[in-house]
Image 1 (cartoon, rainbow, N blue to C red):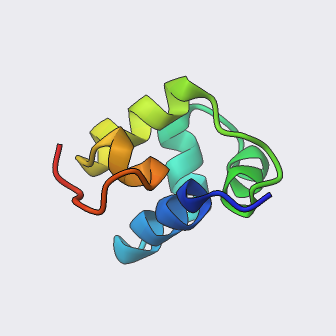
Image 2 (image 1 turned 120 degrees about the vertical axis):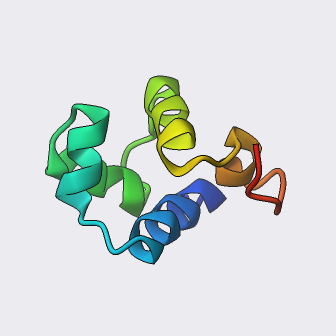
Length: 72
């Protein structure tokens, strides 16, 4: 199962030189679970999607691959 959000959340993190642990801390989850989101092994809960949108200042449509524009 390959979802566009898997690539987008990894790219957003790497573009800012952040570790998976740092993002896991923002989400209040473990690094292991966050790594599973980035691999597409687990679907990311909506609450985490909303947190990432606020953290990265991008729209949910961008992360989900509906829109190419990052702006909210």
